Image (cartoon, rainbow over all chains, first blue to last red; front, side, top):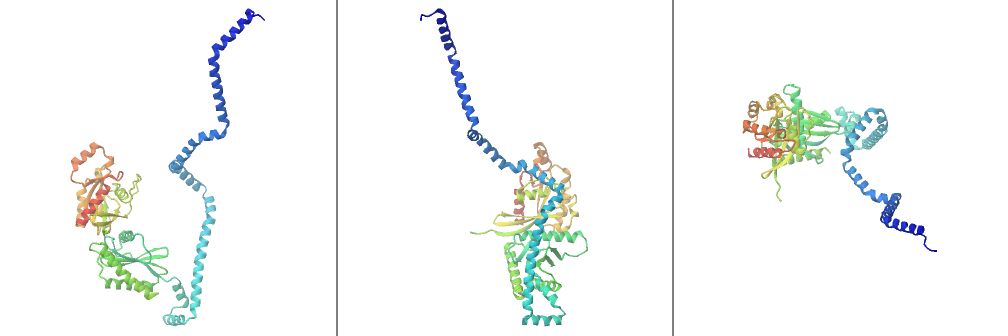
Length: 285
Length: 167
């Protein structure tokens, strides 16, 4: 079929259109492809996770490192408020736990007491026991008094020689290793100074400090004092025995605290204390 | 290996209320500082060991409560002290106005004790104020310190340690 002028014009127009929009079409195609890629990424959770994960990790790490600073005050305030506002609920929640702890402690102590009573009863019919009983009759001490005294026999736990004025440690002995004897000596002296001056009772001196099941007995000398920590039931007999023991020690060893308290002096006094108290413990076991 | 021989000495800290005695001890013993002010009641005992020359010196530090007239405090707190650190506040002239009168009592009570006079809270003074203080009170104080920044705290205690062992 021969070309008509209209047909030819149409072809030419299409050709022109193709030439003019070729570049735009390429751009549009590229945009379309990128949109499709993005759409694929967005719909794939794995892809999103892979890209976002580093940011989350970084934030988590930051929070872990700075949690106390960021949330500490708020949490402390919240807990404090909670405790204040809901005291009854808190007590209800803690009561069973505390109760269990107390029950456990009491039952353990009772077990030990029962064991000691059993030992005392078993011992009651031995020749040694009859001897003690006869001695008790003469001294006017009942079996019950003797058993109770034996159950909580007082014992010396620690001894400190301390300079009266400076509160510096001049010697020490203890059954168990002690963390900081220098501080104990300083604090004892500070307490002693405070009590002896605060109540202004003339020349009176502090003689005993009591805490829990322990007592600290203070024996004052002119330039130093000796502090003895004891456990168990402190009877007047034991106090008198202890006073004699301390006096005998002070008489036997010329304790000097006014000279330089170096390790030579402290060690010399500590060795003397150890020898004296080891001998006493051996005799009284 | 040779070990240092040990020796113990009692050090007392004196000065008015709020001059920073407790903060100086806290900085020296625990390397800590707090802006919170807690007044000392009675006495607080602390301990620090430092090597001085060929000896290991155990300082038993008695941080005694502050007061405008320290001589009114129980004498037993001061007795037996080998070293005195008298602290005043550089920002409060009332804490160092009568320093010589106050020290006279302690010099009489503890004639053998070594003494260091410390102007504390240096961090609160500007350069101009500091220069003026040094001009007017030069020689009256051994160290200008800051318990907050730790400036001269170790040096001052070590200095006192040296003086006590030289006695």
